[in-house]
Length: 434
Ligand code: PMP
Image (cartoon, rainbow, N blue to C red):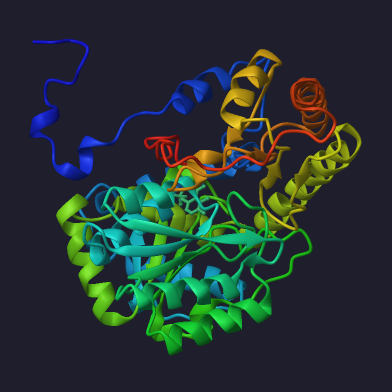
């Protein structure tokens, strides 16, 4: 048996053969060393939770309802939890009925179930470019043909979506759905403007399109603002995904889907085939959290914390970054998306950054087509403001040095713009999906 290749390769399903862990995974492992300021993982600041209160919630569930909590449940998820999730949606001005909801193992399972439900190999799915790594993972595991529509500071460029739809029509193809993260997008740190939401809804109607609306960050606007949901505009065309990962804790792995009834029924069947039902124990813990704790105040506290961190990062970027580097200015959630000058490849930069004791995620993983080599994601949710300033200063120093090199090689005008070569490998899969 050869040890340098996978001896099981020929036996795998076609959709699994191309999957491999990327170098980025190793980078994440190194990034957790204490001397490194990590802007890499998109982890919420759960240390802001009252752990004593969580302990009391968990104990109460076992003490008062252990027999139910340790038993199987139903595939759609507990009705009591779904009622609470309806209240969370109402907090954003969204209306839903508990019957429409399916409880999932985080938003991630929701994205995977929707992809399994709709995507045959080769089917086109449209996504923002860049988009959520785990969203790409769910799509590529179903062998979707992912087409990106670029973002700007107002979110997905819906006029370019319209062009793409026309092009697909000419090719005789139709997208199975459009995957969109409208609020404080991961990784872009931007939100879809109200006009574009309306235009997207119109396009959905005129082109008979489904929308997958993924909304983990809608309640984390720094000013407490909420946005109109696409689901409210075109409910029969929208599958909505929520999660408690960013408003309570990702460790409880609790998310949900709100979908039109026929789709909901298929999703429940698919999930039963995968894992029978969500954990009764964690569902009841989440229920008890919402029933007994000041969860709205907790969300306000998270939001205030992230605002302070975002201010620290944006202030530091302003003073530390060399000319030619640009970035988005988030008004909520966790992320800044940066574009570096031509001549710098962010895969290479990531390795050098680790040596300079700062970590980020290079851009290619956020595209399904190998682009993004001049971009990177900075996540400020975890380090303290002082550490954020320190990390940005380290990154700024590195970028100054890199730019000097670029100018030494190409002259004062810098390098020609980075183009994707047809031979570029596709984006690495199996990346840490956060
Ligand atoms: N969608 C987006 C856009 C995300 O950023 C994340 C996690 N960071 C998820 C879905 C999935 O989160 P979870 O499975 O923890 O709910």
